[in-house]
Length: 511
Image 1 (spheres, rainbow, N blue to C red):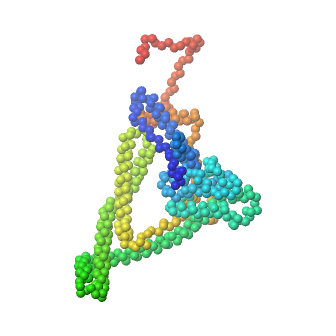
Image 2 (image 1 turned 90 degrees about the vertical axis):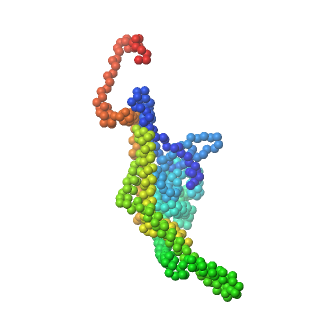
Image 3 (image 1 turned 90 degrees about the horizontal axis):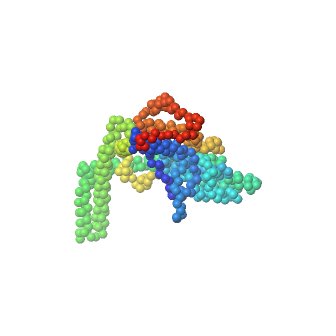
């Protein structure tokens, strides 16, 4: 991760507002409750995700000593559009940005551009390389999503290499560039909008071919591992069963240990010190030691395999019960609903209710994790493909090959779908093209005038206060329709309107 992005600091989200501590029925707290509700309505109506940010905010970086700058709020970026849950790993998403003036292209693995991204652009003439990033000049061009980070990194490197060839090797690929005037030639080389689509289509085609070869290599390795495991575990079972049966002395551990000790004593006897006897006894001792190690290894591995299978069967017991899959789906749905309720809390609920929801969420998550582990144990027990079974493999077959590249799950989202037509006929069939919903949030946001906003705010404040006081929304709406306007006070006429109002002198000041 670039160091400037790694040091971004954002303010935490605002603390949820809770009105349960304020008694809505007490008259002297009505003004406080109304102010709190009005502030809550104003905060919730603020359109935070309208302006899309593409360049790193310099105020988010650490400032020099003795200089304080308030930390800005987290910006609304392309990652919020493409990966709102933030589950994508580094390298699974490639962000492509375009300069609206020169159509220069910048590839990034981060959702925000920084000045170090300008190092991708070569200097090919005057005004060909911007000195700094301007947020008003760089806009999102497209976003490419890959199933694995390794495939994304591979595509990222190839895209940058292809663009460098377009920008620096033009005299070899297209000699007609030499006949153009210098400014037109520079402008044509900087325009990589069409080349980007062709490069991406070619990179995906190369990955499709390479992925097929990687799949063949992985299948061949898996077949070799399966054959070796079948043969090796058959030998281990034969040795372990023979040692347990004790039918042959050559498979008896105690007999082999006795033979090794006896041969060791014979090696030290005086009449066996000649070279021929020593060589004969050493060979017999090594043969018995080798046989003893094989039998002990077989017994140990068979015992480990048996114990591990029993542990898996015990862990998989909840998954074998009737209705276990439906129970897991129900737990996931309830956990999702509780998580949404905690992330967007209802201000009319008390803190005790939220604590109860947190306890229920923790309990559901623990049950869900336990049931998922039971299903994993069940799958391992049935396939018999766990680390104990694969521990007998040689080191060559233990090393897993890279995940094969696949176009399943590769998604290209374009800011302008017309850009995909630059590579028409070159895209692989499995590639999905979609429109990048940049203005989706803006279309869903209602923009009101100040007068309309005040009317809507007052209506919402009234609904919340009536809900806190125990009135339902229907009675509130009926009260709004049936309530008659209060009669206006009678206006004074003539000289009376200039006289001050006379208060009752006998009325108490505190009444």
